[in-house]
Length: 379
Image 1 (cartoon, rainbow, N blue to C red):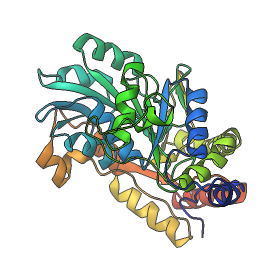
Image 2: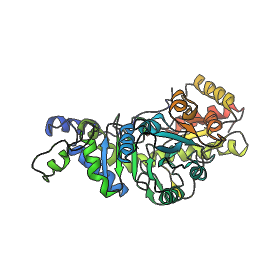
Image 3: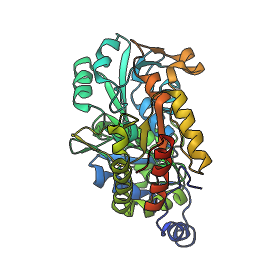
Image 4: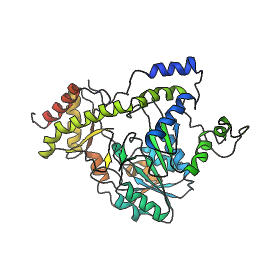
C-alpha cells in the first residue's frame, strides 16, 4: 500500500519532547520550545511577530478577530478552500463573499475581486493553494485603494514565497498550519504571523485569554490582568517540541519534497503533452514548497475511474475541496459573486497523488505506472 500521506518524522522529535517533560518541566504553552519555534518563523520569514496556535483554524480565527470585524461585514475569499477559511470570519458574524478561481494556480482570481467589493467589505482573504502564491501585488493594490485588510491563508505555504517574500508576510496577517498533513507537523497546530507591529500587543492579549500575561512574563508589568476579550490559543510545549525538530530540518524536508514533485512532473509530462491530463502550473514569480502534487483529468467521471483504478493497485489518492459556496453552510452564511466558471469544474477534475517526506523513487514509479496503465499507455 502506498499511502496518500505520512506525517513527517526526522528523528529528534521524541528527544525534544522528553526534554520538555524531564528537563524543562514545562508542558503548557510558551515554554522554551515554543519560543524557539517563534524565533525560527520570524527569522525565516522576516515577519515582526509569529505566535504558535493550537491549529491553522485558530490562527485564522485570531486573524479574523484582529481585523475588528463586525456582524454584517463582508470578506472576499475563494470558494475553493477548506472550511476553516470561511469559518473564521463567520464566527465574527461576517459574510463570506466567494469569487471564482484562476484555472492555472487554482488561487483566487484577482481580476474578480474588485467587482465584489461593497460598502460592507472589510477584508480580502488570499488562500495560497498548494503552497503557490496568489497574485499578491494586485491584491495588495486593491486592498490599499479600498482601505481593506488582507489575511493570507498560507496554511499550505510554509517555505514558499512570492517574488522573494515568504507567504504569510505580505498581507496584514498570515496563517500557517502544522497539521499532520502539512510539510512540517506538530500533529495539530498552526501559527499566526503579525505583520503590523502595532497589532502585536493586541495579538498577544487575544491569544492569552484576554490578559497582558505576555508583558508580565517579559517583566514589563508587575502583575497581569484581564484587559480585553480573548481565548486560549496556545499549543502545548510537547507539540512545539515535536515541531521544532522538523523546523530545524526544514531545508532537508523541502529538498526531499521538491525532488519528489519534480520527478512526478517529469514522468507525467508526456501524458500532458498527449492531452490526457493537466499538471500544476507554477508562475515564474512563485517559489512553491511541493505541498502537494495534483493532476487534473477530463471530468468527474474520469477522476472517479482513475481513483478506483489506482486503489485496486493499493495506491491511495484523494480529491480536494468541495466548493464552499455550494455547501449547506456556504449557502446559509455567504454568497457567490459573479459566475462560477472555474471553481466547480476544477474541483471535480482534480486528483492529488501521494506526497510526503521520504516518498521513495520506487513508490513514485509505482504511482506513475498506475496512471499510465489507466490511459492504456506504457512509458
